[in-house]
Image (cartoon, rainbow, N blue to C red; front, side):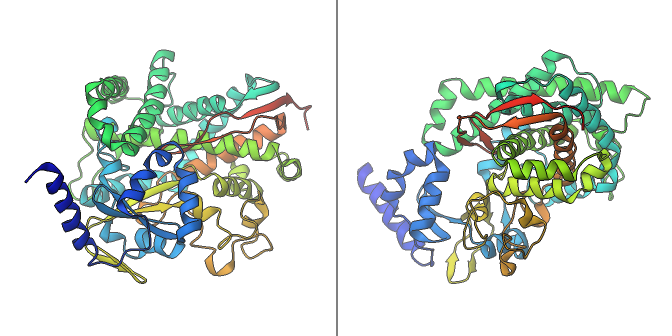
Length: 464
């Protein structure tokens, strides 16, 4: 039998198998691949168009299998919470990203993930991270002393640098050599871009190997791990206590054995904390400043309500929280995630086999008029009054918002990120005026929702 007949038989056999389940409406095998190039270049636009055409839940082909994409909040809640034991992160993230950053919370599944989560979770309880607020505040204050002013200041690189300084300071509370800092920051940014290209263009994976791209990124990963290994070993050899996140990781003990993590496990978790807590916050702060610059009334309202706050008060301030939450609704740092079914499952009228990947489209949900009134508008008050005139519709309010994911795998650093952003925003809006420019930023949807370029007018304010 020639190759063409084998391929045709494979497609037909697989179609018979798939047709024994009831998938959502979707694209055919050939329509899926006709859309592939557009999906690589602009996945959000393609997914939004598909929702308009097919509804909140639809299906496409992934190889010869069908994949389900959804922005239905009930389906998302089912996958993340109600039946979470039947769903793991897919190999798209766990293996493709994991080969560069290791086997930590973000990239592991099953019993190992649960054991690590139970070990590390106590260190991120809000009472624990309060001890890090002073480090955050000092890092912000030092950073703002050197913040550039001008008619067109590019914001994202600045927020990127600040977020990296905060995450490294709270992790290590040491002065890191500039070269080491740059190498770590570049590695986290570069590996994310590479992994997304690899996920979106699986047919080119062989070329990534032959061209040396995989080896190049692996060398960056090895260098990053060597930098972190030196810090860990220096800390272990020291009798000094730093009360930072590295101390927390080194002091943590498993309940069943009383043993600490080994060096490789500590390295993996540090890299996870850096990649999850660095770029996501940089993105969120960049989009927040962009939105405030383009909504002067909201900016002034925030400024008036946050005069004279201490950093502890800033973290708890409802106005700051509302602005941050609304910014993350419109531009969720983690705009999409996926899960793979461990066993056959069904939801509503759909049924699908073990191995089906479910893509959870948070960006689409956050901007859906079905679940948010005036969904495209920046209205922080909607988070001050959940059933108010601009708020999420009461019947959907709790399930329509996933800035940090949900269920047992809710982002472990959510309180940390919110505190960091609140401390920065309170300080920034009282020290600087911000004005919009003619530059309209484009979304660059990698693992996180990065802006391509945000240009704002920045000038220093007179003291309040």
